[in-house]
Amino acid sequence: MIDCHCHILPGLDDGAADLVESLDLCRWFVSHGYTEVVCTSHRTRLYPNTAETVEQAVAALQLELDQRGIALRLHPSLEYRLIPETWRPERLLPWQDDHLLIELPLRKPEKMGGIVPENEIRQLLADGYQPVLAHPERYLWASPDDYARWHDAGACFQRNLGALEGFYGDPAMERTKWLLEKGWYTFLGTDLHNRHYAEFFDGILP
Ligand SMILES: [Fe+2]
Figure 1: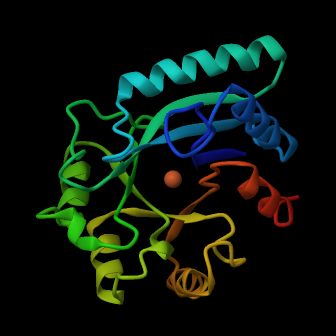
Figure 2 (figure 1 turned 90 degrees about the horizontal axis):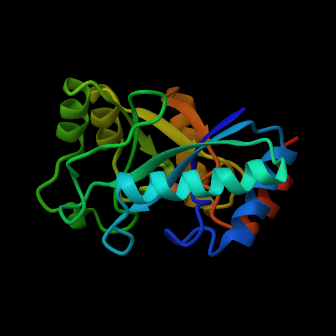
């Protein structure tokens, strides 16, 4: 099992704060049968990570895992927020050769400025990337037409683990059910940030 969305690199964003917490979350992945995870640190105004910072952090954490015999393979990537301050960086860092996790503002779509998601999705496809839209169920400002445009433009949708079980509240749960009925999800990711997430997921995962 591979996770395509998590924040377990120490100190890079609002995920794991230090090495101890990172290792704890890595052990949690292994305990649930994960063998590989894509480390998608935020690239936002607050956390302006780059391909280089993530690659260095992954190499360092992988070394710590290997030294301890924790059987988890890490891959470096980012979760790119479509806001003018951070999008689009010169060097993109995809996972599985061409996949790129993109996200939209959770509460204020106006933060995108002049960025139009479906245009970015089409441009990424034209450039040889497969855009993956992170947790569409959390964009409560989005209309059915918005989702249809993003989907039709060619984005894969990534559902967050726990969204269907209420981890992000009832409105996001209802949105998840609607997107499931549409059949628009391709990926399921944990978006794991800390122990609090892990404990909730313990009640869902085998
Ligand atoms: Fe995330």
